[in-house]
Image 1 (cartoon, rainbow, N blue to C red):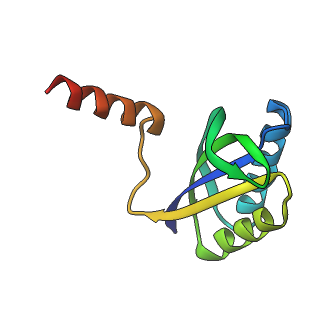
Image 2: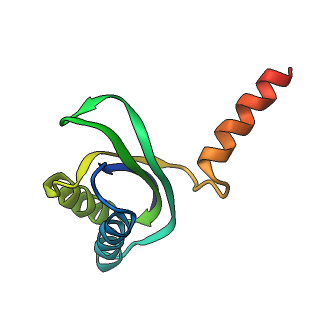
Image 3: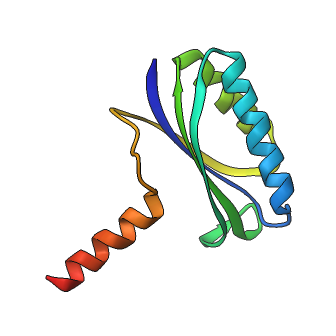
Length: 115
């Protein structure tokens, strides 16, 4: 199985529980197709750089996935049809990161400022 990292942006008018149920439904789809969601990282409600479908904010969620390509194709197909998902991107990675992606980027920038 291959490793993937997926980021999705859900609409701003959804509640945290609705975003969680959306992610659990998508995770269930991956499990049905022979994969597993290794980690879910909810970044919360953040401002978008520009308007997307009349939204200025969105709920960001990052998923680390270990699954075959067919499971990812079905996962992306369901996100394409879901009106609550504004944008998504799934990339194939060599290995899954063990630390929090948001914390690692802030630590890197702090290290660069110190030098």
